[in-house]
Image 1 (spheres, rainbow, N blue to C red):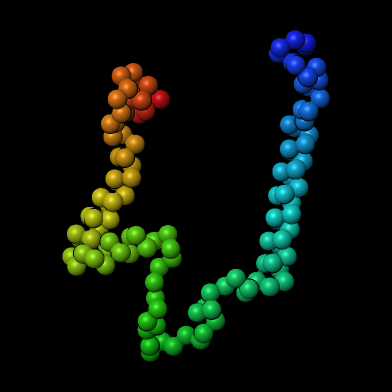
Image 2 (tube, helix red, strand yellow; image 1 turned 120 degrees about the vertical axis):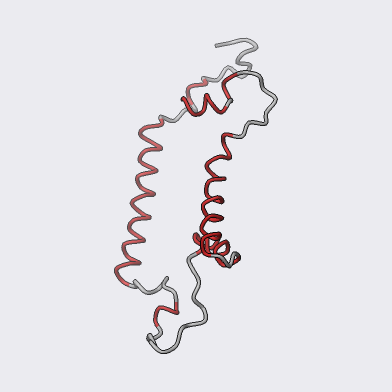
Length: 124
């Protein structure tokens, strides 16, 4: 190509790299290295990333004061602890989860087409 569409006169196909050979091998090499590091870590020092509280001997007479759930259950723990009634806490927990399922169905956009309507999201 010449003219205003290619003022330098260089071949535009010269800079291109094939996706499959280059990026596939690069990604596979990254996965192999990550799995190799995790394998070495779990084989030679499995307790390196463990919680220090797991290494204290258990005492059946004393309840530890630091008992708390994992980070992904903290929202449920906070909801259940904040409501004294057991049934109310469970219902509040279910309501908090249902809000996450119903959030995509709330339609407040100004678009008029059916593409982004909740019924279209459900059907397709």
